[in-house]
Amino acid sequence: MEPDTTVSQQLKDYLSVTGMTLKQFSDICGINAGTLSAMLSEQRRISMHNLDRLTRGMGLAEGSLYEAYLQGCLLNSPPDWRRMGPFIHRCAELDKLNCLERVVHALADHLTYIPLLFDMAELLWNEGKREAAAVLYLCVAQCEKYQHSERLALCRYRLFTIELSNNQESNLLAAAWFEEYVDRMDESNQLDAVKDLADLYASLHRWDRVQSLAETLEHKSLIQYRHRLKRKREEAVEDRPSRELLFYLLYAYLLMANVCDAYQEYDRALQYVNLYSQAELLGVEGLSEAEQQVVHQFQQWGEGNACLYRLMSGEVEVLANYAEYVEHHAEERIPAMYRILQAANRFGLNVDHLLEPHGGNLLFEERSSLLGSYNAQIAANHYIRYISELSLYHLRAQRYETGFRYLLEGLEWAMHYNHESMLIQCVRLFEQYRQEATESRREQYKNLLCGVKKDEETKLLVDERVQLGSSCWTAG
Image (cartoon, rainbow, N blue to C red):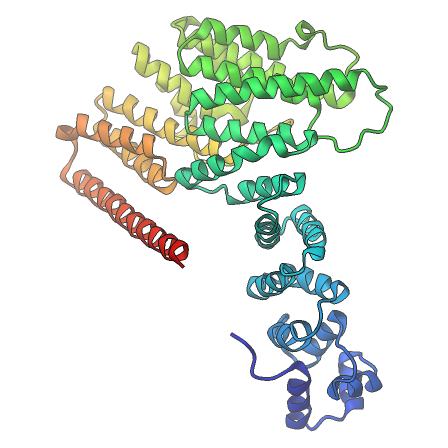
């Protein structure tokens, strides 16, 4: 909504109502009386610094005058980055996204400002102001949509990262939209982009895409790593990826092992474990301190996964070793207990003794390793599958009330993350044991499914409106 008055007029009204002189207000806000007089007569432009001083002096909330300032001082004169740049940054700090969108839209008509908008977006990105940065990235991407620039590709990558959410279906759409831009990015960002896409597809169990992206990651990281080795390690390297190059190569093999695991090809999975947990097999030597930390983390993962793949292949005698590994690596407990329960359900094992220390259930939490935080979508996927396997474990043991409690909890989590495959799995499991459910559990189940149906109807309605809007836009 546009303001009814300008900043100058609001200042005049404030002085009139309070009966203050310019000198008195000058002492309050810290702006020279002569400068205030020039502002009132609109003979002097108001800077962002002075705008915030005026706001505080008038006892208003931060940003209260931004709409008036935008309309009266910025949009009614030729664009000036020296004024608009600070305004954009302050809007981002105060989450004044409406003002931000208006000023960015105005600048989009002037192509010379696109590089400046992109640089500001990167600044906001690095400061953690992702929503505000997204407004700028989207503007730059729309203005350069017919170009094949690295800047456009990086904007699309940033938007893909920002758009990731609890909704796995929307995440899948975001990935499909972004993928075509990967090869347009500079080498330093390609590796991160491929890894992020592979992680997302792994959380959705799209293993064909994970395998393809893992092969791409291996190829690209090998090329860059070998090229780097040809140069002196002391040489300053520009545009480095966010992690050590060795990380991406080892991570590619970890992804390939995950794919083999999904297809129950455990012998092949163990071969990849050897590759990523024994860097010397790749001819890697003379490691820096950062690279040594990478190798150490993959060795740690390899130790646990070697036990896991042997367990899943039927070597149940390694369960004790795997459980001991998990006990010393708390960040792995949820995915590890998911796999232990999966093995228990597959081979008829009793693992009550492993559940007891956790009171029967682990709580969902963010996970991290020596190399940073785990992918949020993968962490959520592991937790939902853990709850599902825990439910099945109790149902098979005829502990029906406990089993249904976890089953309905898993259904709620699957709904929250719009995790379609797990939602179907939970429904199938409930129907399999329906005759053992109490009336209250059946009613709870029915209510949850009504929520799913309502969400689906809402989604269909939104999709129809989007399609109708698209048709009208095309026809126009």
